[in-house]
Length: 110
Image (cartoon, rainbow, N blue to C red; front, side, top):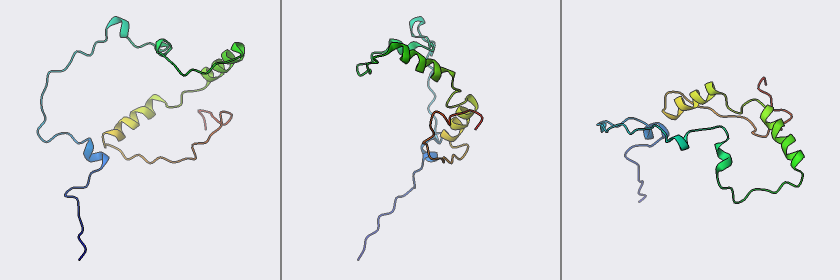
């Protein structure tokens, strides 16, 4: 005789983000960052990076960094908002593509 075990309730990412049936109300924490911890575009430079590559030609490194800075963003603000909607189960996300675009093909208008 074969015994089949069935889950009582299927679990999906949508179930994982559903609000609790009996929400617990807590005091909202103060989210104001300390002055030294405020976000800044170059804050990452202050982080420890024990595995940094060594670049032999500093001039070439800066040329490459300037070129990368000239590219459009990888993810636009509106797209990030759509991803947030998908994260809470408000929309369906279908991802496709070969994920192998070269930097020469990378263009915000394509």
